Each structure stands twice: as structure tokens, then as C-alpha cells.
Length: 205
Length: 205
Image (cartoon, rainbow over all chains, first blue to last red; front, side, top):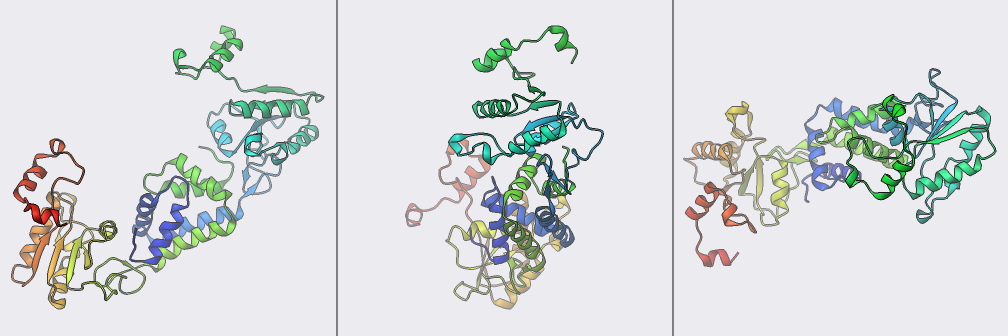
């Protein structure tokens, strides 16, 4: 692509660096910004720069935060003795949007995956163990993606906590709501048979 | 979506204002920026702001430019007596990437479309007529999208220039290269029959 302005070209190149944005999309976005009020574009630019510069990570759970602690850890209405262990911020947002959870989180920042060279030391596991000791945590809920790496991570953390008086659970795996039995994979269907629920309990949800 | 940080939330909201970018994509982009070096994100933000603030429109052809004139108008190797009339910057970029055109451009900034309330006065048509008079332009090539509005615009401009000694052409409409006859619409196929070319001329391209 040839541009008649180097300012335009460098703006397009900056957008192209974002994931999933090619040259054509980048050009469309830049031309859109060019049509906006000067003030709006300044705001766009400032908000992004400020976000990167001022955002903190919660000292307790490693979630993004405006100050030392995130709004979930700072909220005294939430059950501070329950910790939900997740991989990233995305998972926190997904769980929050269900409005079914009222405890706190702990972000591992990834998952144990020897093939990708990620071991326990690169993750926020040691701080989780420390936190459980200091805060007298009552329940730990694993909400990791259901795959080998997720299960390995659960196994590793659970072993580290074997002598602590804490209830450890994991979110249920099973047939998704609206899913069809015949298209489910064997592993999921098998597990969902093993972990079958009394119907009264299921209906009460 | 609920965020634990208002900085994150406002950054996501800014991205959501861009065309074709929803909440989930915006979050993905913002989390990507959050993982980048501080310096890279500052650069992203500065380049966008600078682009909006400093970009000019060429005084002659209304293309984007870094100074008073765009790089195409300022290039003395290009045929300054040929003008290609297009709608927007996008069309300039598309034609430039064919590397088949060595003249200058004139951006109308839109197309005559009474249904959308766009008449000749809102477009850069008067300045085109002035320019042709002042510059003793030899050829005017219309490269507008092939639809009713495009044809109306061609008709209007052509009538305004009826007493000027200038050659007026339009890019060829026809069956696209690689297209199939049976799927072409009647209008295109009909026109491409009317405007048939001697085979020698076609083969020489």
C-alpha cells in the first residue's frame, strides 16, 4: 500500500501491530479517526497512554487495579475467605458477568505448560500459598480451562496445600447448556456421567 | 462487562467507538497493549494524536498530505496534466497499488447522491473545474464506483466541462478478471458487450 502522507502511513502501521488487524482494517480505522473531532481523537490517544502508564496490578490477587488493590479485593461486601483461581483477567470478566460469584480471585497469570516452557515458578502460585496461610482462606475454587494443562495446574497446587485446612473445589465440567449429547466428546460425556448430580440439587439452581 | 479498573474500562470504551470493533475485540486489543512495553504504547498513542493534529489536505487535489501539497502533486515525475477523479483516499490507494497510473488525482470527497442529501455543492467539483481551467489539463479520467450515483456524478461534471478542450474518459467496466460470465449481472454484461475491444488491443495490455 502506498500512502501520500507519512503521518497516515505511520498511524496505519501502528494499528497493524495490534492482533488480528491487517492493513485494510488499519486503514479503515485510521480514516475513521481522521473524520472525528480533533478533541475525540486526543481523548482516544490520552486514555490509551494513561491506561498503560497508570494501571497497577492488585498486590493481593494480581488483577488489574487503579490503585494498590483491585475493586474486588477492596470491596468489603465480598466474601474475602473464598478465592477463585483463574488464569487471566479475561476469566475474571467472564465469571463476574455471570453474577453468581461473590468471593475474591487469584490470577495465576498463566497455566503450567512444560511444552511452552512455563513452570510453576513463572506463575503466581507461591503468593497464592502464602495468601491462603495469611488470610485463613476457607475455600479455594479452581476455574481453569478444562484441558491437560489446567488439570496439571490443579494437581500441583492441590498437592502444595495438602496439609492446610481448606476446602478445594473446581467448577463443574459437563455438557454445556443447550449442547447436544451426541456431539459431545467422550471425555466430557464420561466425566459428566461420573459426576452426576441428584435431580433435586440440579433443579434447585 | 464488569471491569475491576476504571482505566481499563475507559480504554475498552474508546476502542469500542471504532467501526467494526465490539466489546470483546476491544478488550483483546487493550489487554494486548497492556502486555506491550510502556514505550511502544506511548508511541502508538502519540502517532495517532499527531496524525489527527498535523495531517493536512492537499490544496490542489484534497488528498491527505504532510504539508500544503500531497506527495503525488509534489512529484514532478508524474504527468501533471492528467487528473483522475475519485471519491476518497481509499480509491487513491487502490489505484496507486496497481502501479499503472502516473498522473495526478482529484478527490471529490463523496459522490452526488440526492437520497443522502449530497449535492454537487458539498463536493470538490467547483475546485476541479477551476483547476482544469488554470492548469490546462489535457485528460480527465473518472474512476468512480460503477453505480447510479457514480454515473450521475460523471454526467454532471462532464456537462460543466462541455466547452473545455479536454479529453474525458472513464475506467472500463466489464467482467472482472477471473469472474464468470454466467454469474455476471445483465447490466455489466450488457455494457461489456457494447464496449467490446478489438482483440489485438486487448492482448497488447
